[in-house]
Length: 176
Image (tube, rainbow, N blue to C red; front, top):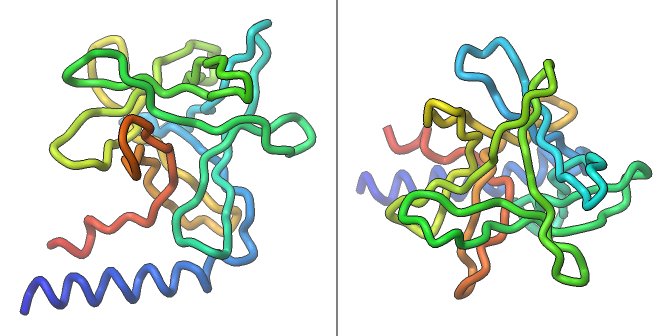
């Protein structure tokens, strides 16, 4: 019975999310400092060092938001994927260009310091996307709508070797 209630709650949450989000087509992707005193920009770094925005794009066909690299005019440039780094703990997060080039994704604080962004390998096919600090601590990365809704940013394994980076509703709150 408890499992049925969890499933029903998740289904209701997901169906309502489409109604709540329909007019919020572009969401910001931000890193959250552990002390809550800073939001870090998440950027793709081009071949000449130029910075490109990473955003979550709402599609009214799904409750899952695509995470993409946008140009200065807001046009979609590249997809964002988790890339196997032959580590038992982390996968890299890269923007993949049309010609297969991989661009680094970094978190940048207010002073300009850059931090790696990685997918933390867990026990399921859903990997949390985190900022990795120099001391090894993990900082959250979230998608934030213009209305203030917050989704988790995850790498999802839909098929084989490719892990797509998506923004998804936070469902762990119903597990309690």
